[in-house]
Image (spheres, one colour):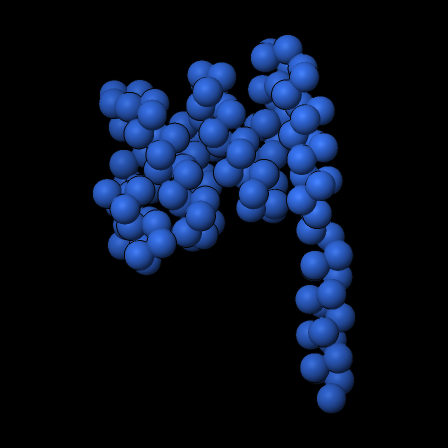
Length: 124
């Protein structure tokens, strides 16, 4: 009984720490109003965060802003093994293109080995 109580408490705390959609939207809005050079460090922070949706948005925005850290951050994101993040990371790397994103090929191949139908189309 003690183990299941701990599991319930753990999942409750984890869910409590997640951003609500309206909070996430407000955070993004606060970043979007900044000048591009001030947005970049904020998006970099979010790209390394635990919030899956913010990681995806951050990778997209960094690619759009042509940030030099886009490739390393997208490569690192592929290591998470999350289908949604993998799909966005792969799209971002494809957007950057070769030869700039060639350093991400090993990470893409590794992600493809573990891919499911949810992220395989973006990884191929």
